[in-house]
Image (cartoon, rainbow, N blue to C red; front, side, top):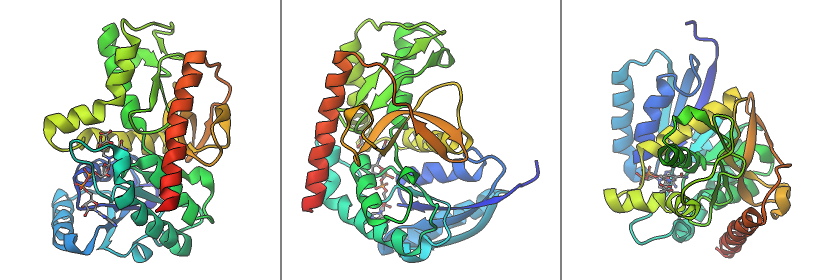
Length: 320
Ligand SMILES: NC(=O)C1=CN([C@@H]2O[C@H](COP(=O)(O)OP(=O)(O)OC[C@H]3O[C@@H](n4cnc5c(N)ncnc54)[C@H](O)[C@@H]3O)[C@@H](O)[C@H]2O)C=CC1
Ligand SMILES: O=C([O-])CC(=O)C(=O)O
């Protein structure tokens, strides 16, 4: 197929684990299809040699879609002209930590990168924040890059959504593609609310044998993987980043998706928080928050809990 257009994509934390799984998905056309990709790879100075190794491997793949590649550690150089930035750069958690324990370390990275975006970023650049705590890092980024439209800032909760689909499919013994509209609400943390309230299997609503166990499993799945591997999720995270960007870019009619986006007060959530909502992706990086779903009292209470945690994280970020 003929290459139609090109996009400039920056990956931060580019010498890290998730980047190492994500870059091949991006350059083999699994995110944007047959679109040429100019790549910007950002990491800290001490990872310079490792980044060179990543570039060598990209060259050795002889991807037909690769355009030019730049590497470095200065966001003010690498964010210029980018259409999309994937923020993987930061410290991952270790066993025994909660994601919000990373705020102290990662908040300053997002302040600095937000300032760089404000100074050199394209006015319509799209952002996907993955580094934890993803929602609050995304909020910090948006606060410092005020010239960029607020709907261009998103954080990754698609991994949680994919996990939820997989667990429901197992519990019901149904194929994954029979399921729709499982939603992740709120924070990418143990307070998130994975909801089946609006979900269907083969077009019918359903109940799970043990809903409480399902919710807890998804909330704690990151820790389950971390404890088993000694490291946090990598290729499942990269796969979710691929799904998030692909559906945001192309649009998706058949199901609601979950992305963390800046709230305008939908469902009574404090405006400005980065909150994972039911989202309809409309194509060309446009989306709408589906704001009119009816919620049970159980769901409303779950939304409150995760909103309160995000308000606390916001306060902590402001104090840092
Ligand atoms: N939202 C989600 O669903 C998920 C989020 N994560 C988070 O993604 C992040 C990345 O995870 P991994 O790739 O496994 O970690 P990693 O430690 O392998 O890679 C992180 C990279 O970021 C770099 N880095 C640190 N400070 C930087 C800065 N100021 N600018 C640019 N790069 C910088 C590091 O040098 C390192 O190469 C972590 O914060 C992790 O907790 C991980 C899995 C799922
Ligand atoms: O749990 C972690 O620290 C990494 C992560 O965000 C996840 O796997 O969901």
